[in-house]
Amino acid sequence: MIENCITSEFESNIKNNYLQVCSNVSKAAKAAGRDPNEITIIAVSKTWPIEIIKPLLEMNHIDFGENRIQEAIEKWVPLKKNFSASKLHIIGSLQTNKVRDAVNIADTIHSLDREKLVKAVSQEIKCCERRPQCFIQVNTGEEYQKAGVLPEDLDSLIEISLEKYDIPLEGLMCLPPYNDDPAPHFALLKKFAERHSLKKLSMGMSADYMTAIEFGATHIRVGSAIFGNRKQNKINKKM
Ligand SMILES: *Cc1c(COP(=O)(O)O)cnc(C)c1O
Image (cartoon, rainbow, N blue to C red; front, top):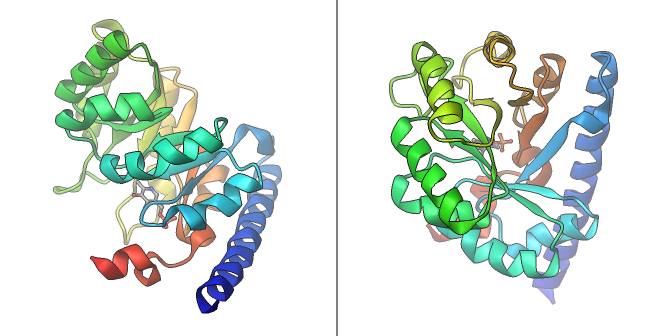
């Protein structure tokens, strides 16, 4: 009983949070003179269990993001059976030994960042006959430990992705340094995308998605503003 109460309170919070994000997206889009329908809200459900995700699916929300392949499979193989219109975005850094699973389950992969990975994804696309949309992740802050291709190596990675590996490349993704003003990073990503005629920009998270929209984001990745603080959820407590 107690658990049910917690769940229903949680559920209405999540729904309200979600509606708030949708309304903020509309506002930010209009302020930037953009059509809100060209912005995909990716609800980042990493660490949250299926019961927490379902209310959003029942509201017909389509796009969800996960950063770990194993967790994505455990949750989204069953969820996609019941919600076949849903789309899964892999937003975390990807190891080549997880590429087969990633291509099989993902509708979009946001984190291509090196030739070895691009090659592995291209091989899987050929043999498993699924063609997830792809983004190249750019390390715009040139952070030593962070995933993403360095700006100086981006042009050649885009070129081989398209010409040598026939990757369905749609756009670029970035994750600005934690303590930086994100705006210059968003502007830089947009500039890179325009230079290569790539139309999609995956940028902006809970703290800065309105700014990202101002700078042209087409895909925003929003976790805690919808689901709440990940430190408080059950899966994290177990770890
Ligand atoms: C976790 C994560 C997000 C969502 O972060 P929030 O601040 O909770 O919105 C977005 N993008 C990536 C790559 C992530 O790993």
